[in-house]
Every structure is written in structure tokens, then in C-alpha cells.
Image (cartoon, rainbow over all chains, first blue to last red; front, side, top):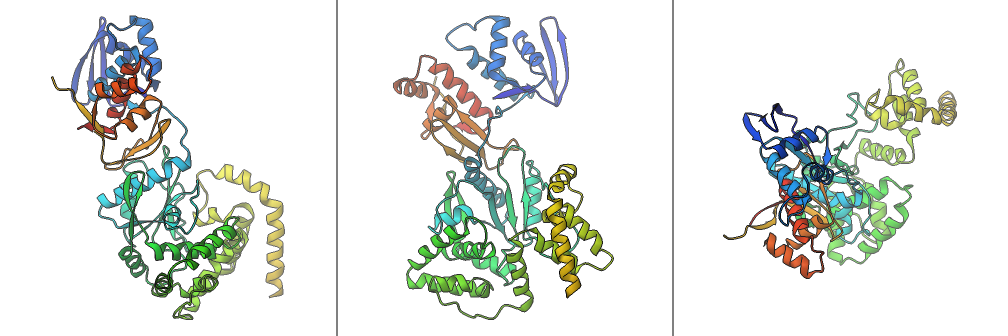
Length: 386
Length: 90
């Protein structure tokens, strides 16, 4: 643990070996030892280091207590009085350690705020035996549509920010989630307000998933997550949307093996849920491979199928999304977007330009320029042929 | 005088083992993020699966082969856990 003088310590007067501090509206008289602590800790100081400095100055403490324990007690008392503040020492945190704890935290924050939230992907998929657990990944949640700004506001009060704000301009592929980050957590939260591939009304789809939810244990706390069938649907759509991701082949095999082993009632329930969520056509191929008969095929609108096709194609690389952006832009904007396509990756376009780390991104982009120019030239050749 | 019993906060999410525990308050959440407990702090956290006094924890640690500094270590660990809001009086 580390400690430092509290930032709201209004004033600090030394009088001989003792002192008086004003913390907020409290006036506190400090002993010689406490005065020395406050003077020593103008910056974050490990409590073990502070104990050594106090021992150097005052000698070993009387009695059986160690200098470290007595220092910790003194720091606790001064923290309670508002004279000091404390935090953990900076011990690196691994994603695998933080993820379950973070899932529990965001779930509870939402529940306290009256927001319906489901943990999706990740742990919810492995919990239902559809995939072996991964040691990495963000925390993905799906909230009742319309409540995501409220969740964002609540989390902002405890230090969560949106590192990359979504672009205000219409995007060729609309964003389905907002990423939140916190400097003290090693993993991020992706807040989904709908799930790609489900083309039913987002509020109705959420209600379907919510009514079939399961409560699991995550870091010793209850967390609401999607039930068996919704977890399989979400996992399946994710696999269908990223066919060329390096993990897709092995995870598809796991998904198929799990669903094939289900009893007929569960398999039928999955097909019916897919139909109710407007996902029959987007997941039909995978259902077919699992021997599940899709119901109500051919009900997805042409616009939704085109959106799905764009998302699948975009998962193969930035080029497709930039191509869409160029083709759908007004003529006067096309050259500007083409230049952006050469200089930046698609993520920059999704979140508006320039980015907070624009210079760094620009340097990274510079390494892409030769390949990007070749790609742009091929796009222009294609355009001139059509 | 009766010794104070301590217990884990019921709203604390945590994972880990005797070497290292990651813990975070969930209600209200801690703006400083999760806490990484190592060494005696991790041991005390796991030992608090049932409410216990500092003396009981020290006796348990000594029985577990802890060195003679156990009393000081347990005291410092409990102080640290209380300051972080992870434990509370039972």
C-alpha cells in the first residue's frame, strides 16, 4: 500500500515538533510522529518505505509491534482524519485476473442503478460448455437498449471513460458497442446496445435474452448472463461474423460439438430463439452444420442481409470498410476519405479524426502507406472499370 | 474486553489464491479500481472465509507455520484491508 498527503489538505502549520493540519473542515493536531509522516509523504510513498524512514528517525517502536504494523496503524488513523490518502502499490494486473472481478463490478453497478444488464460472450459461453475458457478478452455486456448512456454516466463517476468517442457522422457499418476504459483496470468493458446478426427489434431481442437469463458466479458475486440458448446464438453469430479470425476454426468445432450433444428440445429452442431474434438467416449455415433445422428462413430484409454481409466482409480487414465509406460518401468528400483510408486504420474513421494519440497513430499509419497506396490504386482501378 | 471480529465485505468481488488475490468493492465501486493483495494480505483475505479476530488469525497463521512476525503481519494486513474497504466489523 502507498500513501500521500490528501489533496484536499487545506493547510498545514508546524509548531515546534508538532503541527496542526486542516483537512476539509476538520482541524487536526498532529503529534511529532504524525507530523513527520505528513512531511515525508508529499508524494506517493510505499508504507514499507515510510516505516523505514520512521525507524531511522525515531528508532524501533516500543512493545512487540513491528514498525510496519505501527506505521500502517498511523496511516490508517491519518487517512480516517482526512490528512492522508492511500492506494495499493502499483502491482501489474493481468487481464485474466481482472476480468471476472470486473464483470461482477459492472453487473452490480448496473443493478444498483436499475439497469438490466447481461454478461455476454466470454465467460457466459464457456459457462454453458460452448467453448473452453480463454485467458484473455474484454468484458462484454448487453444492456437494455436506451440505458447505455445511464450506465456510462454512472461508471464515469468512478473513473471510467470512453477513450475513443464514436464518430458523429453516419458510419457505413454502425457501431454496436461502446468501449469504456479505466486507468487502474487492465481490461475494458464493451457495452453493447444490440448484437450484430440479430435483426429483430433490439428491445424485443433484449427482452428475449433477459427472460431466459442465467445467474452465474463471477468472482464470488452473482452475475446475470445469457441462458444456454441465447449464449449459443451469440457465440454462433460471433463465429459467423469473423470466419477468418485465427481462433474461429477451433471454436466453431467446439460450438458444433456442444450443440450436437444437446437434446432435441434444446436444439429446437435454439432454432426458435434465432427466429424470434431475427437471426435465422445469419446463423442458418452454422445451425445446418450442427444438424439443427432453422425455422422461418428467408425472413431477413435485404437491407439487414446487406448489413450482415458488410460486417462479415469487414472482419477480414480495414479495406472493405474504407471502400464502403468511399462509395457511400458524396462526391466532394470521396477524395478526403480516400486520403484518410491511406493514412489511418478503419478504427480511426469509426471514432472520428483526429484521435487523441493522432501523432502516434500517424507514425504507425506511415508504415502502412506502401500497402495502402497499392490497395487504393486497386480500388480506383476497380472503380474505373465499373 | 471482547476482541473485534472481522469479515470480508459481502459486496467484494475477488479471485485468486494464497499467493495473490484480486479484489474490488462493487457497491459502491472503488474509483481506485481493484486491489492486488499479495503475501500476508492475501493469506488474511483467504483466512477470513469465516469472521475472525486478529488474535484468531494470528493463532491460525502460527499454526500454519508462519514466522514470529505473524502478529505484526496480520495487523498490517488487516489495517490495509480495512482501509481499502474490503473488510468490515462482523
